[in-house]
Image 1: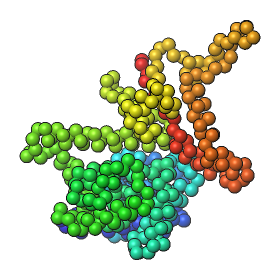
Image 2 (image 1 turned 45 degrees about the horizontal axis):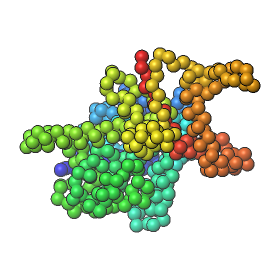
Image 3 (image 1 turned 180 degrees about the horizontal axis):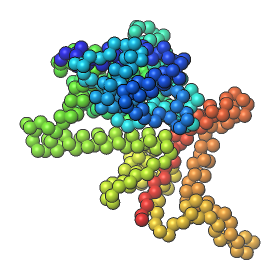
Image 4 (image 1 turned 90 degrees about the vertical axis):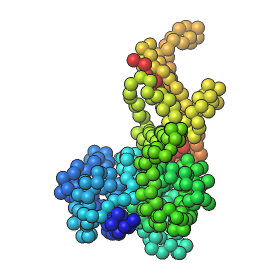
Length: 419
């Protein structure tokens, strides 16, 4: 494999990462350069924040935006960016092998006003620490700085496995992109990174900074000594991509083998869909699944809810029926439902032996009341409220902490509508 030719993007991306750091304190100009590059390339720049609030951006999102295109448009954008930042552009014969792209939301932050006050600053801090540590990996202080900044970003809304892809874009030879394709590949190849493989199988959530660096180090040492023909993370990423494309197409496989592979791929794809929709739900607070009857929308909604609560759908449903899981409710709408049943309405009530009508919470309002009670009983939340009263934090910091606690105490209602 011709590394210089097939992976020509690596040199450009590395130089671009260095250039981006120069705009850490001048992000408005960075946004302007990004917009100019897209305009001159004749490509529409997607929405990257709430209307009127696109005044900030982080370097990981910058990379995601330019890669989330067809190869032809990607090359056009790179040509313009090379001019904007005085970087040597990729040659026409240089390829994009091994460079992953995000297929869904490209922003590494929540849109205004839902993101934390310093979320984008934290992403810049991690980006700088990652580049710094990659240049001096023997420096314990720089390693600890990376771990601290990584763990700080890890809990932010909009950040999940995508942060490992962002680190890979910045320094492809040093950080591994643990995207779903690569994780599936590692789990299937038992001889690769044996010391980490069992851990990889257990990963349901993003590893912390120390564990991530351990994975990078172990995998790098392992692939350099294996006989699969790749000696770097970009080559490993490309091998995983090729295998994902070719799965099920081996003419030497039996019909049952092909079916088993197809079932495995479908399961992996479905798990990725559930995880993506869960992240969307955390960001938007509500989602609507539409489609023809009998296509699995209701069960998918239950899977998303179960993922939010850290349970299997079967366990969640069983616990809800037993009355031990109050964070989940399933409601089926029918023509007889009205506002008073679902939100709030006047209900008959005997008061002193006389009939009267009193405002009564409906199903949804009561569910929200129960969620609020648990939220405000949380000690961290109480502590944060006191800090707000004492002036130790401002309203934005309070809102960011409140959002984090809300995510940790998720309440999910699935509504199945019957027309």
